[in-house]
Length: 330
Ligand code: SF4
Image 1: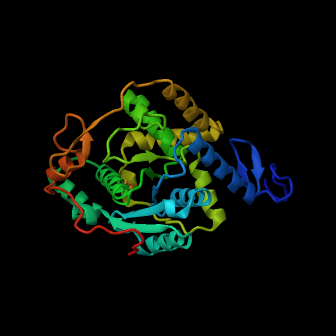
Image 2: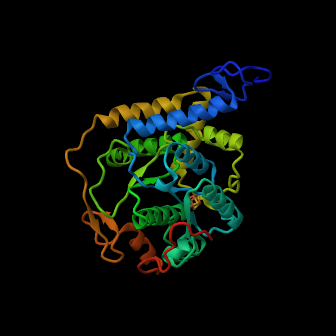
Image 3: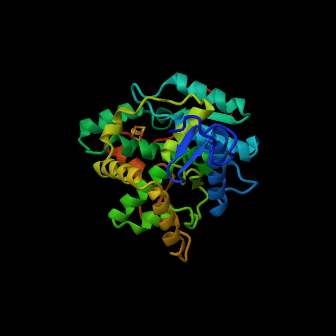
């Protein structure tokens, strides 16, 4: 299909990528520029980053994280960026070699990198926590523990290094799935809370999260990483097949719908933007403090969700025993 064709944008270089939602064939350079431009437009549209912000980038070593790293490093000063990689401790999934390559790539860009783990924070790897959860018959999925622990560690480190923004690499596919799940569950509060126009929670222990890739398709982050020659972690998490059924079904259906209607997900998230932007809440949400670990939790709760879940399987009060400083690489 692309053989011998010229790029629809620059009309000079050879086309290498077909972009179904614009019906264009693009060369490597124009495709990379297109992604950069769309990410920066999204950052500007929602005022995600200002020039004096320090940003902690949560990178897993996968394709999305490399795109986040590449785009932010091209557009913001390296001393304002720090990368964080969390090793979950999942057999066959976390490869030390991948973490080292990621760390080297980040350092070569002149950016500090921190590598930490679920075990550093809770005293247990995700595998060990899952084993305890099965023994206790909690019925909770590995992703429930893993997601909460990672969110806690990301916020913790963002605070530790004095970052005022925490950037995650969620892409358009992730964003569409989450929005649709919230709609199907009738959970308007979460839909609004997770949107970039939401009022920032006024809490000095909680760092504002931003998702600069929220309008970039997953296939585009894969293509970008491939064209840039990044070494991406290829192995899939073995717990992936245990993700909640609703999300798995929605993912499958959204892929099918997008295939038949190129651009459908972009239109869907665009519509969500229009709706949520117009729903204004008057007050900034406030949070309470967990009486065990001292971290922020929903108002009215004595214990945070993480302490509650870990306590149920016999793990008390997670806390770091060993803080890794900026620039230290394992
Ligand atoms: Fe963690 Fe679930 Fe992702 Fe595996 S699939 S890394 S358990 S959130």
